[in-house]
Image 1 (spheres, rainbow, N blue to C red):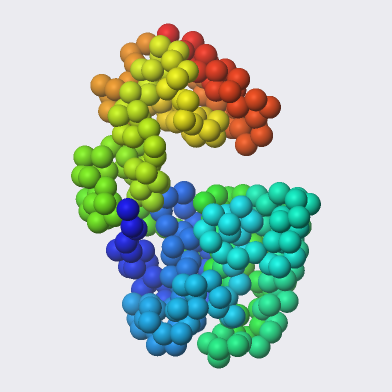
Image 2: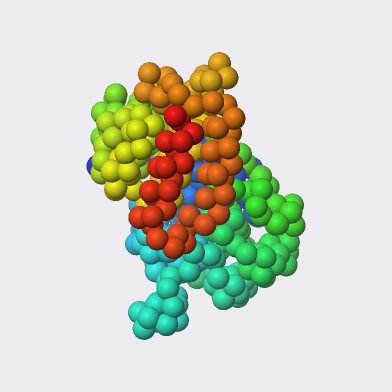
Length: 329
């Protein structure tokens, strides 16, 4: 299954390229394509034959970005994200990880930010300026963010920044104030479904997964590649009401908490006479009081804070299912 360029990303690229500014902050929830838009802007900035629509996709600069070797592009991501997306780590960081001295970082490390600041001071290698891409920008801790502030406020003449964030409210106000902000566009459902079809997702499966993702097309595409399949998602709410732990056997604790949040939201909406968002009403259990469901929502919010570091994933899943069953009884 191959991913094709989304038309709403192309439209936003054209719009942003028509505006001036040395630093952009692309903000919105996950699944709307912040990283894709950020890379599209960077490609156009560094392209040897750019147009109003963006990069040409054929020049040496575009090829260098495709193979992750562009001398004028600095990508700042958590090491876990860089490894997942195929971006090379610095020689020092790769050596430390290979030697088992530490695990890949889930935050953007201050050492990487200091290297990026030094990179911004250099002369452009290809003559089209330099670009620094930061994603997800909310993974900068305060020390890392403060290391960026001075350069972001007064960048060298040919350096440009694009910060892509799925939780821009977590960024320091001083970071946000130094960037031009762009709120990601939510594509219409028909456009999102058409794109999912182009990516190889059947129409009906795409509709279910788009609903499961809350209308976010990139998240829906990831859902469509999910091993248990569409039917497992549809059957999940009633399986939780029965206390069926096996329904979560292929899930990580983080995925489980996210799914349970969605079930809780939709059952509460149904009880309140509002429209559901993630499931069809017929797929939801009818039990549960508003008081119990509200208490469950608070318990899930508490679980979110430790879900990345569960003491015992299996026991945590059992506890989560037990909570769900009590709330939906």
